[in-house]
Image (tube, rainbow, N blue to C red):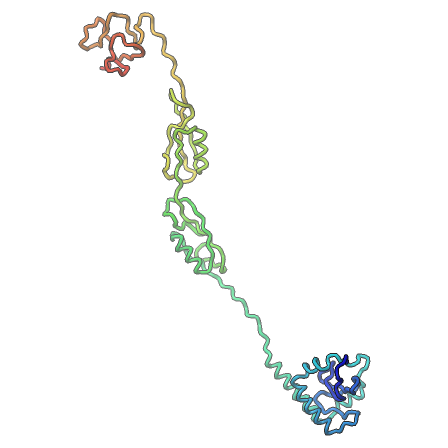
Length: 324
């Protein structure tokens, strides 16, 4: 036994069948067996019957409590030879022992039954799935709506949408009120955001102004206006005006310059005094008709001064003479 001291000859628990005991002769296991809780037959050695009975009674008490533990610790390394089957006659003789053995076996069976009754198999608790009713949140401030959903065990997603409604007010919810959801489900809230403001594009090139408005989410309508001076294709005006609020997609009207130079004036007739329109025939002097001047020529206004004013008709220097 690998240097360990051998146990004395006697009856010990059988390693194959806990209901039996097997005889150890001091060197090896023998084929002799007996019921574990019946008095074992006398050892084939010189041991007296009273001594063996006393040993057996003490062993039976220990076996009831520590049978498996003692077998593993003391005799784990000493297994009976698998090639030595217990004789059938000995087993029959052993199993036919007296009523005390039957009584002991009944006690063990009752004890085992009691222990089995005490073992109650735990059934896994059935998981309860809680359903949450979605509250009505439309027209509420977003802070209150968010708090209601989180308190109910639901999650929140916020989507901002430009609106004329008060900023932060819930416009709609993707899950209708009263619907049942599992805890942790997401409810999306569409919340009012301010309407965007129109970018100012006055004085910009038409292409640049149109691009800025389109990028801001507006539709652009361009109208040409013919002018006689200034830069061509420049924004002259916009409607709505800059910084005003407008719904996304609204039409912004741009008036863009279309410069067309006026035709040159026709040459003055040969019998007209240069610098006056309409024509004033050459004379020693002109005065405005109906005035206090003494002529000899009189001009019916208005007379436009386009050059020099040899007759001094434009007294106020505004380029127009004889207005009244």
